[in-house]
Image 1 (cartoon, one colour):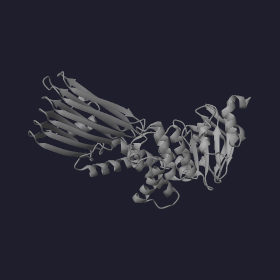
Image 2: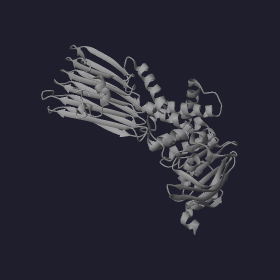
Image 3: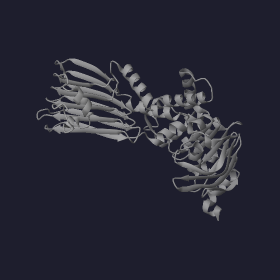
Image 4: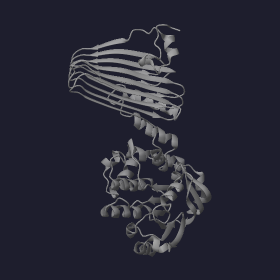
Length: 247
Length: 242
């Protein structure tokens, strides 16, 4: 589904990714772990096309198409979803309006008919309900005045409504209490654990992986994947730390 | 040159399109509106042709006045209000200016709290692109006896291009000692991270900008009798700029 080959990327003048190669197939969940500053968030932003993140070498294909050629909104329409580490507040724009526009923009880009107001609200109610968010919050401006945990939960509600093929989740577990972690973990499994979907989980900690079992765990250090293993690698990392592993 | 026309040395005209003003000089006398005690008055000014509107409004005891302004049309558009509040009167201004190209749009207002317990609120939002200029010069004057005055000025401008200009001068002149006069002013650009967030969810760049600008001006026209017409005209103008 996603093939990253020898990816180099700069933020400003600073090289962050230095030859990263990674392959994700449909039906797989991959976790990327690594120390601070390794390039984890940069990878997520580069894949989604954030301005200022410049690819200097290498290639990324998504379902056989050149991903780097597409604008951010086209990547979303192609089925890519980035769960933000720090979801952005957008004053004055309600969640409902935002999500309906987003969903219908994606459908239009794919040549599908727009969803009616009632059709959209039905989907929104289902997804919000499954993640324990009430509809009043969906009517409020996007992320404004939400707690850290509510913002992350809102990202998952968005993911449920948009229903992407590939989700890149950047530290979706940070800022969550234990109950919220379980809710979010269950959400990821319910929405994304399907044979035609894939997930790239970016995380510091093993604890989310207790709920969302990865098929592969990669260690990202200094802009490259330095080790790949199964779910047991995460436990090893938790026990020994990144330093030990690099040694 | 018209010798009686204002020049840039006149504070109220310092950012104006002087040659246009000279050509139009002398202007007709300002429209005079007197709202009687206890009365309610509302007016919508949709400036979409490039003209100068001058209104003198005296609001009587306990009366209310609501003015909604959408300043969008012509090379030079000016809305000038001179408002006097008597005891317990209430004045509300909701104004939006949207300009592109070389447009010069301005809102010039003086609100005088002449007697106690009057309230006034001004919300002004400007969106400017190209080399357009948008100006707000707004003075709230509180005379010595106008105790318990409560006034608010909220002035914000959004620049879509770095070549556009926003001038904003919220000004207070207070001679009473028991008053509440809030004023806020901000000039900025659309939040880049917000735009990326909207795009990452599938919204095309121009639509993302429009959504954020719509949110920026939304609410200003709340309660206006012509709210729908004003919002529709504002959105149409935004469409031209983005």
